[in-house]
Amino acid sequence: MSFQMSRDSEMIYRGSTFGKEILDPDCPPIWHSTACRVADMDDYDFANNGGKYYYNRTAAPNRDMLGDAVSFMESGEASIITSSGMAAISTTLLTNLKTGDHILSSKSIYGETIELMDGLLKNMGIVTDYADFTDLDDVRAHITPETKILYTEIISNPLIRVTDIDAISAMAKEIGALTVVDNTFSTPFVIRPLEHGADIVIHSLTKFFGGHSDITGGSITASKAIIDRMNPNFLLLGGCMDPNTAWLALRSIRTMKLRVERQMENAAKLADALSKDGRVRYVNYPTLSYHPQHALAERLLTKGCGPMLSFRVEDSRDKVNAFIRALSMVQYLGTLGGYRTSLAHPATAFRNEFTPEQLKAMGLQEGLIRISVGIEEPEDIIGDIVNALSVFDA
Ligand code: PLP
Image (cartoon, rainbow, N blue to C red; front, side):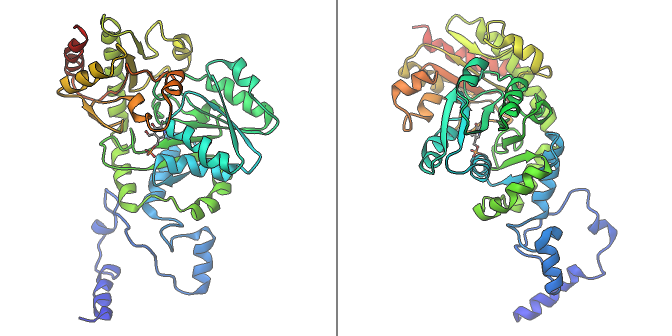
């Protein structure tokens, strides 16, 4: 069979033999095609000027459907869908900053975001300073005439600190800077930063949007004007998501509210149980009255405080290792946000990148354990963790 013949046979799919039952499926198809055929140069000009679709990296139907869903969930006008959360972060910073600009970032953020700021961006002459974003005076004190972005997570990784996003956005507006929020830990079911004055909201879709530990992706949501400004350079940076992953992410979003609400309920129950356990020094979860931003969380996080918590036990590497081995249901994973409860050890995750002194200054002691709470029965999660805590009895 010649290539031409196989191409002819494809024409069946393009022909009139399709009925409505195939052309109007309840679940969208996956458009794997790298390119869509263009009729002539006029058609190419149309496609190339936003008429789309003609080339996958430029625009793709599954990515667009996912982008529409994320924009809706985050109350934004438009979204860029990226190949990972880090692609969303790097694209946002690289396309909104130039040499000489200054980022003022919360010091309690995802470690690899700090690595990006202090590595590649610093080498390009974009300097980042870090402030305690739970202390508005400290934030104000670090602003410079070159500050172009205030960068934060609302519920921070892994210390679960809460940022007063209304106050931070207002401060950014005063100085004409953009407020950029990584909302991965909170999810739009906890808070929608754009409704609180933020300009750009980022997600690692790998986490709660995906929800099943089977995709890697990211998103950037903002006004249409901001997204249109970023898009040409995003296309050149090339970090777009593939159609199959976009389809899976959209499929997963259908159950995200159910998952996240249940995860938040379980997280509050687990936080409560651990806070009463004598072997636990403290629990980082905003529903607890001793959490440093408990009052702020009550005002800001009215729908729940998210599915992530951390707690600190004895600072003994050997005992924490024994605790991890003693767990039977909760798994140690290099990710979070899945429907099953998982654990991470932040100090181990960043041992190669930061010195022991830096780790301590960042609050990442050996005894700090981070939990991504799943949808299992709360008694099972609590039982597994409390049982494994017996390694600290000795
Ligand atoms: N932002 C936060 C808060 C994260 O926890 C992570 C990853 O753990 C990322 C961004 C990066 O996401 P990805 O691994 O999808 O690149």
